[in-house]
Image (tube, rainbow, N blue to C red; front, side, top):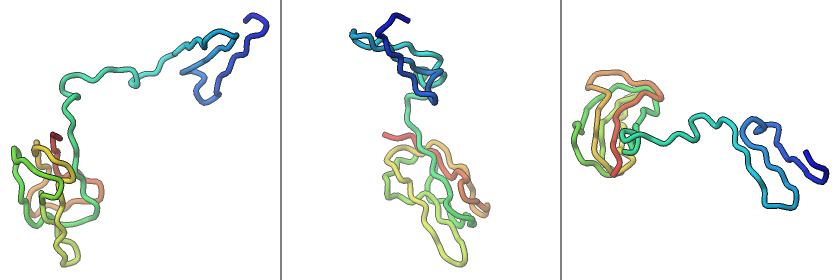
Length: 119
């Protein structure tokens, strides 16, 4: 390193980025950033959204099917917990790709209910 140069490196990002200042515009050296630099493939370009259960419940009724066009306020399934019926909404506009539950099943917090390909 020549005199008059200052090297700035954050300890938490030392393996990823180092910037050198010497009166010239900064020079950036980028190390291995792993998956952050990977370009998505064709199958990843289509945005999909997974609707998940927010509580432990029984699947009372499935109201949507694979291939259905849905909006953010459309009901996909109705869950039953503690004698209450809880509608599960699509959350996004798109097409239902897959339903991961069937009537009579039990879902737990975080279990996937449906996959929707966003418009």
